[in-house]
Length: 419
Image (cartoon, rainbow, N blue to C red; front, side):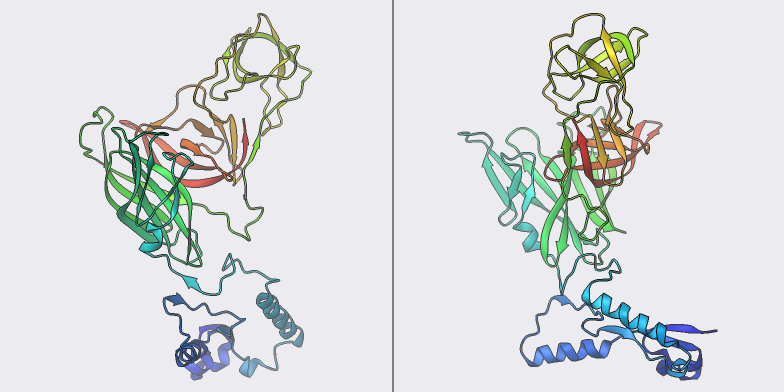
């Protein structure tokens, strides 16, 4: 039996077993200690940072082959030397660290209290906190204030798998009305710089009991109201919600750096069916998109007017390649009636999952609708978070004895939006 040791040169740790160790993967603790002493001696020791041992700084390495020196082919030794050089110069990546860092700086409560967060309640969609607080006029010229504050509850832990502590915080917003809204925000550490990457609403006038990060997920324990409880009542129903976050990092395969937003117009297919349109398409707010029905009572939403004829195309889908059919109108198109709520028709998540806007009933969890059904049997819970990169809360929902139950959810990037 031949073994490869770990942490130290095992031929020195266990000399009686030296003849079974081909080599050892070594943590050069002596190099680390020497570097710390040198920095202290030169009054340059930074403190508060993690030391990352690499091949480049001689913090890790391979022990000699010792008794196997003459048995290891030179070609293999040359290959190992080339791999070592590739790891040092960056031409070979192991996948960690996923982004290049020299030292890892930790997030601090002071950083989190003086950070700009996303907020749906402010005029420009952000809340730049100073000492944990931000306020602005609720409307131009109004004496009423929208106040955003950082709650006293913060959790630290690794959210993105890079072995560096990130953070989860809760923003509490009083927009000047009767509600007090709680939003969970995930904050990623990029070498000591805090980046709020995703947020999700926890509800109105909840009671937050605890906030933790466990196994890469944010766990929120809180009190909410039952389905029949008035908003004026105190929250008494214990609820635990778990959130995962998937962050696209620099060396991910085909990373989502910005969401592609497409105003979809299908081509004109050869197939035709008769029918009529009776309303505007659900959620799209497009004057050329309708909810239509064929003569055999099949409903299609959305159907698109593609020219001035007008030619109406139903059943087309850019994610499946379906061309659809031309709807030969049996009566004129109705006047468009655009609602106030805009929702894209289809979205593709970063992992390729496709989710479509439900045009009928949808699951509701704690008064939050899951309006999108996905092709992997998950749902998107709540409103999509728009920006340069759109985000969504992807949820697994089950049906229990008392209604729909949230099993788990995570915040994920959106690759493509069709509207």
